[in-house]
Length: 246
Image (tube, rainbow, N blue to C red; front, top):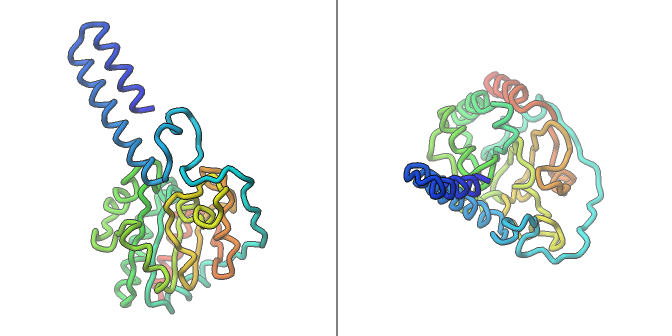
């Protein structure tokens, strides 16, 4: 939409013979097109299907999506605090839910306490986490999270298998294993963070509802996954206080 509005503004500038309007429109159109290309690559989607309004990825087989059976297990703040205290390595995966709740500041406090206790803590950022590339990087930088512990998908994805705890905060589609396991899924082929390979996964969400793509997440049903339901900011504040008291 940003790109379309830019090109429309550019055309209007031509029609009204206003060079400044034409230049501004061209800049908006080009930047919007570049952003669209980045997001299409990150989601493994064909840019033509985006322009035409289709959602399917390049890898979608077009059949019926798999039905995942099982029941999600929930946990509480005290149990997660104890788990974090006993772990040696933690990877935190933030998503749009963290941005909406503005929970980056208490999360930073929790990370500081864990690192002071000698824990290895890192952040894993998906290219399209949030509503545009870089949104979560900006939020973490705003809270003062050190740049050297914030890593991109390609840099950290193979490390989950050696991690004690993967803490997912407000992310859903970007950690959905159906993208790799179900060729008929609407997000099939999209690169995702393989949080399910960690020894224990804690998912912080408001509810068990599907993400933006409307696809159920089988990670929520796995034996090594526990759901910590509630507002991200409130929960992060409780976790920060609990970890600090260890």
